[in-house]
Length: 345
Image (cartoon, rainbow, N blue to C red; front, side):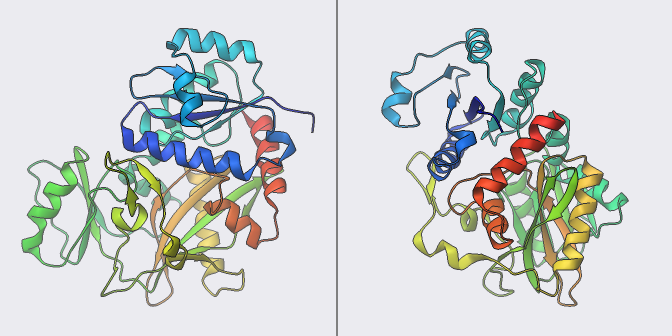
């Protein structure tokens, strides 16, 4: 493959948390792919909460501070002049997943990952569940509530915002008396809330699909530590245990690896989860790659929880680690995704 000019799109216009999250994942990607030849000629676009664009030489705080702030119109002219071949998105807020990807569609610059309309749908958990259910995927019984609505699902039930990520505002309700507090917590993050039947966990797993030459390849499953008594559901604190004083994500503690691991392909639930994940990928219209979370009940039946259409090539990144377990090197993974991105945008 000839040398490519790569643009890493980093930051957030939503809040400092998502800006910090984007920064850390992009930083990990750049460190982990420094020797990947197809990613060595790169430019960074760093977007801050005020909507300003910067094009720093690196992601060091000094280089970011030294970079000249630009308006959107000036940034577009700058990007056009760089003759970018491929954009890799590291923006995880809703505007970043939708509006900013759409901008690159208008600029006719290919990028890794699904299109803005797909990202918008999967950002809404109820819409996502409805779509995958029509494809024959198991989804927990649930209902979509707005302010003033009364839940009809009998506990135990999970209450969560319909369009917030990272388990923000999620609660497990064990008694009807706990509904009011759980709903109030969820409505702090969304105008719509999902209440769904709690799937008693045998296990919780994540499945990744990558596309190679138009074919769907399901990778080994990532599994998360869950326990009916101690950690029956994964919460925001489980996913983001280390934040700075301003609420920015700064990393994971050393023992975080004990909370998740990659299984081999001989795992007994792998085949069922792979089949469901492929159905999800097709039904939602994903491209290049996808990630889906499932609860596996004590009988070994997988149930769809949510989609997460993100990829970080950083150290410990889910897709990278799953691919490595399947015998796909980081270089090969990048090449596969790059080829698909250039051919399907």
